[in-house]
Length: 114
Image 1 (tube, rainbow, N blue to C red):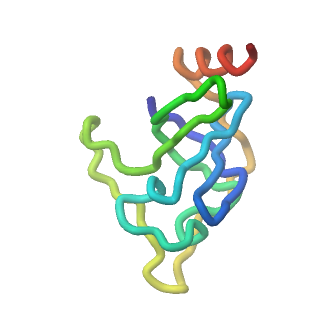
Image 2 (cartoon, one colour; image 1 turned 30 degrees about the vertical axis):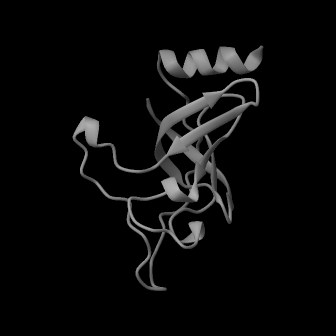
């Protein structure tokens, strides 16, 4: 499932994204882009809206694994761009938080309420 979310925190190992359920999901550094990422801060910033794919939901440990890599099964050929120079500009942070949509988002919300 592909959702829109807001980056809530950036760490050395990846980024946490609020996708509208009780628990933030983690985009591991290896899933931030289709190319090698040395520093997650080169790709995402706190408050930035991103599109993520839900890879795994671990309800007992309250963990959601997400990916920002392009999605070949949907025919998307877009590549997340990594900063090539220090002049790389990241879009301004979003001021509103998106609401999760769809049956999968509702199921995730119900699972984490238990």
